[in-house]
Length: 274
Image (tube, rainbow, N blue to C red):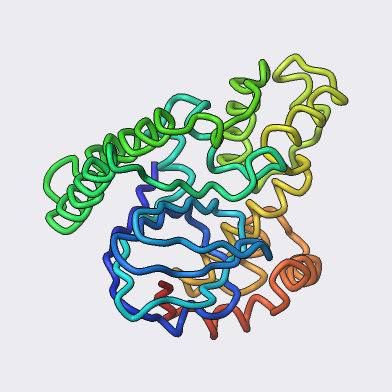
């Protein structure tokens, strides 16, 4: 597993985040003081003191405004880290967006606020110290945060428990690991012993996305990672992320991002959101 974790604490505005951007990592933003206003896939939400916002790796988002005293923790991690460290699909579902889930925003009550603060403080310590097994400890702390949130309000995770949840979890995990391959619905249907119609319906109900759209956004997410962390050419990135045709890659990237891959690399390579 390629471990990708980032834990930071910020105070006040950050102009770099005040434009549409799309990370290849999942994010948790916990506001300790003040407030910020974000747009997630075009939906505006205020994250005030004591709130915790969850953003998936497939969502575009903008920091619209932030108070000068806004103090917040930002915990970023890859989907590989998420699926490796958190085993229960009932907890991972919070990183999917669907009509039933809306934007996962938690108002932490007085009973749990000290626990959440302590968990994020421990995350900062682990990440900064980087002692032996720090990534494993961060995974344990991630699970602890998710369990605390689930106990506070399980309805935000899922309104109606889907009997297909575990199977969709396994399919997501497979697609996250094999996004670069030309995987067909027939192959998934056969591998997981589920009809194509039931597969498509259940996957969309749990994740809020069609399988085709999920694969596309996962490929673009990983393309962004390579744009920001390598010197690979556009054609190399296209091939490594499963597009193969670089012109098609550029077209799909621009359709999602409204800018070309090269423009993205230039504009966001040194950005430091939030």
